Image: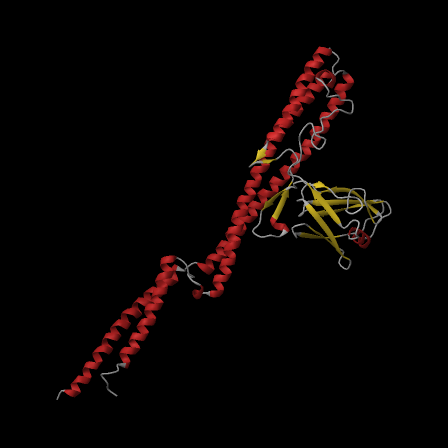
Length: 398
């Protein structure tokens, strides 16, 4: 049928040209933005996956910065401890000098005067060393075991036929930690105040043996010793009994470093900054006792015996400081590996997210060429369809 009122060919051409223009618009949008997905309609599933990946990428990137800040924090403390080490070495040198009986009372008093000044300088350095307003060497950032023997697990509590000989909570955050035990799998769970939990497998203790329950992700370790030996189930039952099913950590607790993108125990690293003040028993313990009298300059190394006792006291302080510097050094090495691991994760997550989200320019360039040709063809065909109606007029002439 020939008609000049309804031009089906033109309508068809116009419809297809509209489809081509819409597709071409999307191609141009993707090329101009650089993204394959510019709105949820482009790829709803891909958008959800890529946004989740972006959260992990940005979280891990921030975690890298957090870990590097933690390294700087440790280096600040360790740098101050290095100077304290130098002071202790000088104090020991003076002690050896004072132990020589070629020195008279006046000479030993002069040595004692310098020793008092050096001890004061250790305390000054320890009190002055801080990172972003946080004291690092006063024991403010370390966990302390609290609780009572009647209600909580403390040192020397009985655990079945074993004894809790050591409970280290220096790396823990403050709060109450609770034990649960699965007798079928021999799995002991310790859950912290923030809901973070760690599961370890308990083994039996042999006669005259010991067992360390290491909840390293929570910063807590417990050493049990037994002369008669004890089974895993009895240990688990004792630790979940009402009297010993909790560990209480007081103080401000260890510094928690967020070194992951999520909220599990494996995304947080606790670093303890112990007390290294000279005049504190929890620090270097340079106090009167054991033959050393810090009352005045004249009494510290008053004679050979006092000087010998002083040398022993300094040796103990050096050993304490060595241990605490080693702990921080180990934590720094761990953080450096954390940074490397997070860097690899960010790189690979970014590559995966790019494959989902980013535009393939080569493919889109080919599509643009195809759509351009279709657009030009569509315009030409529409023009021809509009001209076809002119042929009907020839039927009216004549």
